[in-house]
Image (tube, rainbow, N blue to C red; front, top):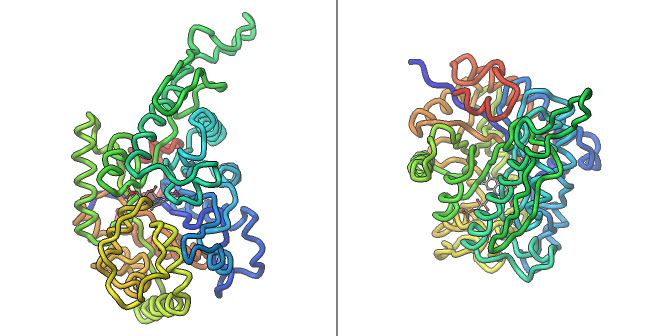
Length: 433
Ligand SMILES: Cc1cc2nc3c(=O)[nH]c(=O)nc-3n(C[C@H](O)[C@H](O)[C@H](O)COP(=O)(O)O)c2cc1C
C-alpha cells in the first residue's frame, strides 16, 4: 500500500553544548564541543538525506533547580553549558544549501526588535532557509540572568508571546518586497514610500520601526513552536508552521495533532500548512539482537547516572526531584515550567521516567533499519501525519551515519521520505507534501 511521505527533521538536544563527551564513540577530543565541527557535519549529513530542517535547542543558564545547586549540572554537563546558537547557525548555513536551519530564541531574553533583525539576517544569508524556534523560556534561573526575579506565570508568558509575535511580524513586513530598488542610473537604493515605521504600542512591548534591513527571502522566517499545554497548543496553533511535540504514545500523538489542526481552523488557518513532528530517538543496528542490546545499554547507562536524569527533569519542570523517592509514584505535579512534561511525570516513579527516556510507550523504534522504518510508517498511518523529529542527546558521528545511511534509505525505499529537495526555501520544502 502506498503511503503519503512524511517530513524528517533533527532536534539538536542540549543545543550548542557538549554531547557524548564521556561516552564511547564520543570522539578523540572531548574539548572539541566548543567548535561547530560536529554539528556542521551533522547538518551536512542531514542535507544528504534531504531532511527538512535541523533545530538547535537552547537555554541560557547553568541550572540549579536540583538540590538548589549548580553542582550536578556542572559535574555532568546537564543541559549546560551552551554556546550561543545564533553563532552556530551561520556555520551550518555556510556549509549547506538546501536544509532549513531553525534557531531557538527566547521571547523573555530578546527584545522583539533585536529578534526580528537577527532572524531576518539569518534568512537573508541562508537564501530563505531559516526558522525561529519560538520559546518563552521556562526556568527561573534563566529569567534571573536577564534581571527578572523569576519567570512570568506560565499562561502570561504565552500572552506576552502573542503580542511579541505580532510586533515581530510587523517589523518583518515593514519593508515591502520590492522596496529595495537598486537603480544605479537614478541613484535610488530604496523606495522610501515602501518602507514603513510600525509605531507599535503594546501592553508589554513597544517599537517604532521600520526594521533596519530589507525584507528577507521568506519574508517571515518559519516559526517553530513546542507548546504542549492547553494554552501552549492554542499559541502554537495560532502562529507555528511546524510544531514539535514530545507526546509519548501513539494515542497522545494523534490527539495532539488533531487538536492543533482543529484549533488552527479556528484561527482561519489551513491545517495542512502546519507540520507537527514527533520527537523520537530510534536505535538501529545490523541485527535485532544488537539493537536490543544497545537499548539495554542505554537503560543501564541511565540507571548508573540517575542524578544526571533527575537534574534534567528538575530543570524542565522547576521541581526539585531530589525530594522524591526513586520508587514511589509521584503526586499530580504542577509546574510553571514545562507543563506537558510535568503532566507526563505525574503518577509514575522517577525510576520509571528515567528508564523510559525519550521512548514512545507503544512503539520502541529499536531494530534493523528496515524494521524501524516500517514501524515509523505504521505510526504515521495511525497518527495521520506529518513526520518525525529525530534526536540523540548523546550525539555521535556513529549515530548520524546509522540514521542517515541506514534508516533513511529504508524510508526512501518505502516511498515515505524525500530523496531530493524540490525547493531551496524552508517553507516551500515544508509545504511540498
Ligand atoms: C521537542 C521540544 C523542543 C524544545 N526546545 C526548547 C528549547 O530549545 N528551548 C526552550 O526554552 N524550550 C524548549 N522546549 C520547551 C517548549 O518551548 C515549551 O516551553 C514546553 O514545551 C512547555 O510548554 P507547555 O507548558 O505549553 O507544555 C522544547 C519542547 C519540546 C517538546
